[in-house]
Image (cartoon, rainbow, N blue to C red; front, side, top):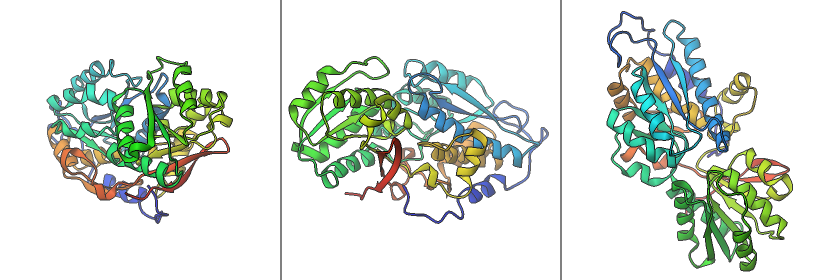
Length: 386
């Protein structure tokens, strides 16, 4: 999501927004738990362990940085970060959501990180009035359920799917394409959008099992090889994508793999092997995190000991939106929800304004293509809107 933006505002602007105003004290009045405005919490909801943890760790580290900076500026009225490890599982999401709801000091969440767990948890958040800002769940249907507490700081698959299809058609110029998905809310939805763009160029398609339930893909590999395609699109997450790419390469299939943001992580390269992963194209409705504005990259690395990854910067921005509301005295769930609904401002990754359904203003949405090159995921180009 970059156009070589000027890196002179961003982090400083967001910090100024968060740091503005006066610090609160225990005598300032009521909050969600009835008493003081300090000692409040925000949560991160996403996979921190298990096969889907890489993306969740990226995001949690971004949220951690936002909270760390906030607390340094507000040492007498700190906010606590509560990590909620979903392991990326929709089955675990409702219980974890209820845990957050029952903790009255949690005023808002960053997440859920994945679309499947969002489908399971978000109705509970809506009923409880607990605002949540996802930095990565991109299924379009999430914004169409009437959940007043749902917000998203990235574009959805109605932007990413067509962009991936456009890249396959205009950049790769593939005349025959094979489409695979993992049957998840995210993966299947993304694959469907790609099919719409490519039309008759999609000569065949197949489905696999996600969530670590399948590791052997000889059936789909045989079909891809027989189709003799110029590109393969995969809708799903990096753990299966890596194994599919590895097995395609072993079978002699050289057509490039194209996948979405769920695969846009170095863990994909580890799963596939560097040689097999080389040349893979990965899309994301996000700019390169290492291109974030201000001092974000250096600050992130100093705190976490690693460079920011996919969605580290958007999670940081999502957390700062919640923290700005808390700083402004919105220390009950209802007032913080209203603050987020009406929020406009600049972050390190983008500028933010929410429209109907909690979606990011379409004018702010950009989709980038990344390429696996030399054993690393590197920016390739911003994909032009069709």
